Length: 152
Image (cartoon, rainbow, N blue to C red; front, side, top):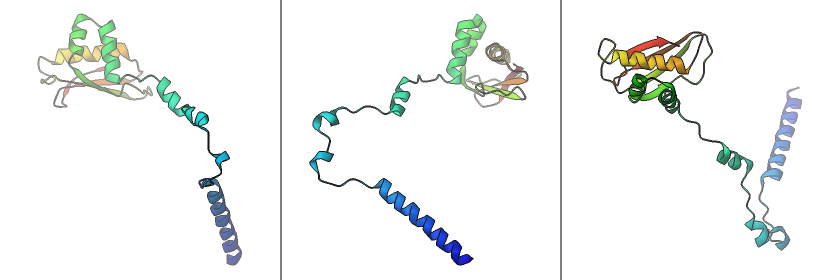
């Protein structure tokens, strides 16, 4: 029985090797008819993958999208606050079970400082921008400490 399995395994390996050799080798013939003419080689068409990359617009980062939304739809106070945003994370995919997003700023204060109300403005602007059944946005200062938070 083991001998039969060894013969079958050897046969499968041989088929794979033969298929690999026949499908992957270079054509090294020096026949002039196999070489493309100058006219043929001048027509280099980009692959479908290259065309798709050229046609696909570059998607804006979450930070850019948030700033753009606030600058278009926000109050003057929110527009002033969004100038301090350095990064937005977690605003791209939600499952409505427990959605969390983070806004990072260049503020130096914490949640009991004078910067906290501005952080609350950013959380409120985020709630205007995104919706979730159970979302929490947290605003952080420059040190990564919590400045404010809010539901969205």
